[in-house]
Length: 495
Image (cartoon, rainbow, N blue to C red; front, side):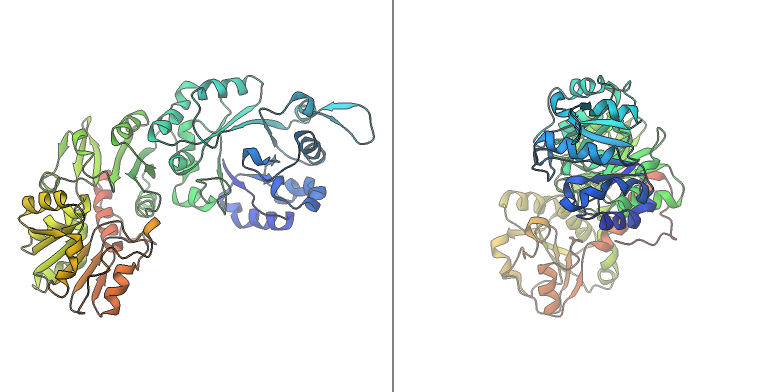
C-alpha cells in the first residue's frame, strides 16, 4: 500500500489533500498532532469522509511529531477520537506506559484498557519505534519484540551509510515469518527503501505532498514514476549510484521506458558512500544493472569482470550491467556528450576546447574530443589529476587558478564539475573566465538548467548547452544496455 501522510492543520484541508492524491494512494495516515486543537473534536468523521482505510496517529515531539502533551492526556484524546470513528489502524509508540493506556472516561471512575477496546472493535494497533539518529544494532530483535505483542511492528530508523541500507534490506530474509510489518528508513540513504518497500517486507510506504518525514516522496512519484506498488518477485531492479544522487532525473528516463515496453523493472536512486558495500547490496537484492555518477565512475572499475573499449580508454565507467554471472562496464557518457555538438565538430567550428575539471565525467569528455581531433586543455584545482589526464590523452593542462588566461582563446568550453548545483547553487566555478561571445559553452549540469556559468556565457552572446540532452542521449544508450531494446521513440520525456 501507498500511504499518504496528511500535513494539514484542518480536516477540510486534509480531505482536500486526500482528494488531490486519491488516484495514487491506498490508505491515509491522519496526523492528529498537526491539526489545530479545535479540529480534534470532529476528527472522528475523517475516515468516513475520505473513503479510505485510515491510520490515526497522534505523534509526540520526541518521535518527530508536534504534540507536546503528556502521554496520558495524548492517549486519552486519541481514544476519544478513534473509538467514535471508523479508523482501521491506530499508531501507538512502543514505550507508552501501560498505565497511560488505562484511560479514564470523564464521567466514570472505571479505567478502560484502550488496547483491549481497539482489538474488540477490530482496529489494528501499529506499535511504533523511532530512531532519528541511526539504525540500532538490535534492529531485528526490536522488530521481533514488537511483533510478539500481537500488533503490527513499525520501525522508523535512520541509515547513515550504505552498510545500514544493507541491514534494512536483510529484514525481509531475517524476519520473513512476520507477515505484517512496517519498515521505514528515513533520510537520504533511506529513499531507495521507501521505493523498494516490498523488497524489505514492509506492508506499506509513507508518502506526502510535503516532506513530513525526512526522505519522503510524493504519492504521484511512488505510483506513477516508480510504480512501487507493482514491484513483485519477478521485478528486475536497476538504479543509479552516486553521492549526491537524489537530484537525478535518470528515473524519469528509465521508468517510463520500462513501462512503455511492458518490461517488469524499476529504476531507483541509491545514495552510496562506499562502492564495495553497494556491490554486496546488488548481490543481496539481485540488481540487474545500474548507472554510475560522481564520484564513483572510477571507483567501480576493480569490481568489473568485463569492460568495453571506451571504458578501457577513458578509465571511467557510467553504466554497469550483469552479464553471464559478472559485471560489465560501459561508458555512454562518451557518446551522449557528443550528440549536441557533433555537427559543430564535423564542420570544424570546434577545433580547440578548454575542459574544466579532471574527474570521471571529464575523462569521457576529453577522450571524446581528442578522438575527434579537437585540441584540449584541461584546467583543474589539483595539479596531479590534471597532469595524469593530460598525459593519457595527449592534452595540455593548467591549474584552475590560471583559467583567466584562456579567455577568448578557445572554441569550446566544457564545465564538468558539480559546482553550480546543490550546496553550490548559483556559484560559478570559473568567475575570472571571460567570454567574447564566439565560444560554444557546455555545462554538464542539467539541474538547474541555467547555472551561473551558463548565464554569464549567454549574457556574452555565446551558444550554450546544458547537460539535459547529454543525460537523455546517454540514458537511452543505458536503456539499450539494460533491456536489449532501443528506447521507445513514443515516450515523451519530461525532465
